[in-house]
Length: 245
Image 1 (cartoon, rainbow, N blue to C red):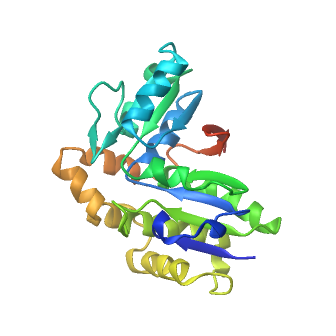
Image 2 (cartoon, helix red, strand yellow; image 1 turned 120 degrees about the vertical axis):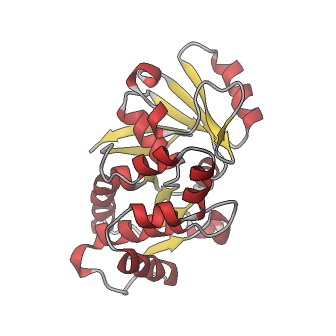
């Protein structure tokens, strides 16, 4: 059994995904927002790779109970009903709705999981339920991969720290190097550096600083609240649905 971390989807070969249990992280903000939406009653979330694809899918599905959701470089997409803020995902806006979502980094990471045995979405806000599922899969003998979305194809401190927290949550106090790749070891070392305070690596990351620069620091604060939305988004048949914690 192995537990690997990839700091960006581009660092992976296809055979590194195939047959594994994959946990996708884009803590600022896509995977946080997905958990918030499903916790507040969204029916499902369909991730797509582009704004154009989202528009076409809306035409196919019809506008009833379908909401376009997402951002580009942190900012809401003109013509979309919702952005990529977890604070927007209130019950009044999303309950019973299907969200068609595209983001700069997170949705692309999800779409890169083709061939995985199981795919889940992780962030601080659902860390405990994600860790419980990861422990179960390891106990069942499945190899695991924690895939960070990164930032514009590069390493992201916020995602890497979250990956380290998930490794520790999965392995518990007996976290050892056996079965971990070098990226997983490095992610655990980030947790040793920053400790258990989510705000330090999130606020200090390039993603966190970028959100602060465009007036969205409240989203960073929301994303730093561990187990705020204890639901586990499961990606199957090109849709995310919520598995209660």
